[in-house]
Image 1: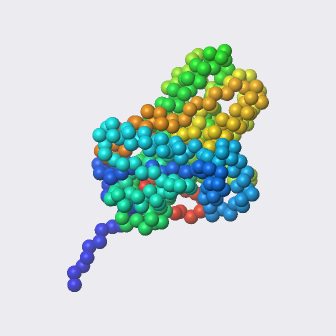
Image 2: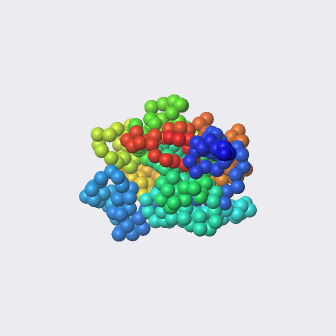
Image 3: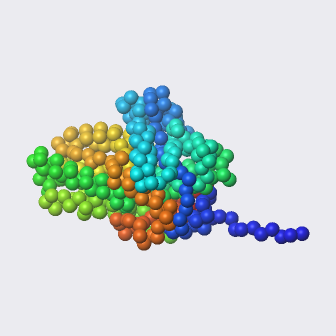
Length: 394
């Protein structure tokens, strides 16, 4: 009888050999067959709104009456979220940038909460003969909902599609401090100050509000690796603050104005659960009482004009500013800015070439972030750990 040799099981689910042992940065070239863009998803008509919101809140037992309280945000815009149109445009822009660089990599697209679903994208990849995929999630920062849940989405989709043994999926690092993500915001801040100056608002009476999605305080504390201390707001808050500092430094606004704050928006959930604060509207009201004449609102936590940007900032925050007699200018999201698109392709090239971490661009002391998330990274304390790609279990 012969004894069969068994190699140790990989520590990273569905990973390529270069990532399977869980290095912080994969510095070995990997030949990927295709890119897969992972989005949140959004409704594209009035009939889609409630089914979409049921998907978003699945497993939480939220009744339709409460979902309708959020649905009116979408119904205000005809039941259409801009997010799917953005991802179509982003997919096309990434494909064009890849082609311009001579990289023959198809880009597939799948969502967490609405068509096209991620499992369908994986089925398409398999049908087209692709076996080694590199994921890009449309989210820049570290937290459960903005990183780990996307990694869980990939794992769930692999299982749902029955392809867990067929496909290998890695994921690019979180890109919060990559120049391609940061520079469009800096340009936007600079342009906002120029616009306000033309309207007669002096720079010293302008306050910059960097706004991002609020999350439960407990999730923020657990964001990032367990073995590193990023302060009470975890990696999520630390990353935003670090990027805001860089944006202000690069923007170099007229008159040397530098007053800025990190604020939050789009809170949901039980009122008794602590979430990150202050809310952007509360911040505007408070600033109005201190002699601030104008605010520059920077949607720092968003890659595109999601519904949270159109409603919470362009509608509610603007109304609050008007009520307080404060001029407000909202900075654009990166969207399909050429610098952002080029930056995403740079992240792909890092993995194709196995670029050493020391040579990877990062504009804050926190980066470059990990290619393979650390054990327990970005835990959701309300649920048990679920399988996730691109990270060491759990």
